[in-house]
Length: 183
Image (tube, rainbow, N blue to C red; front, side, top):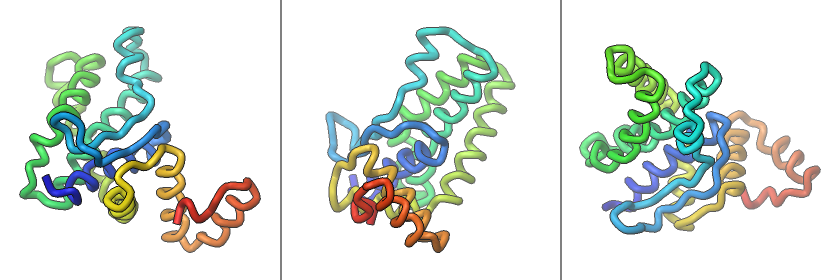
């Protein structure tokens, strides 16, 4: 598969992690078995399955994870609608559907909920497209990026787009963080 498509897909997931306030551990475009890349993050899905908690608080957490799952295929579809984004996102869609079923079962409300999550994810990807492209460029060049560094890349790029790059760098300097890591 084209490395740019894999990078866009994984960057879509990673940017969603950052924008939704989740914890990113790493992102890579190094193929493993039959997958082109992966994003490692705190796995809320496993904890939900373990506890069986279906409270409103947990549903809101699940919504963020569902959007994270859908963001990779959505970014890939936006980049190249003719790519095999549905097949590439098969495990992503399965994880999102499993979370949805946990809260809504198999009925009409589950279908409507997933459609709502798709709309929200499409908006999230569109609003953060330049961040996704920037991170994808970095992934193509570096192949694997640790979570903290990927988060820094995303935040620094966002600061630059908002015209606050100097302030961001000053804050990093005050915190003794290498500002060039996010360049």
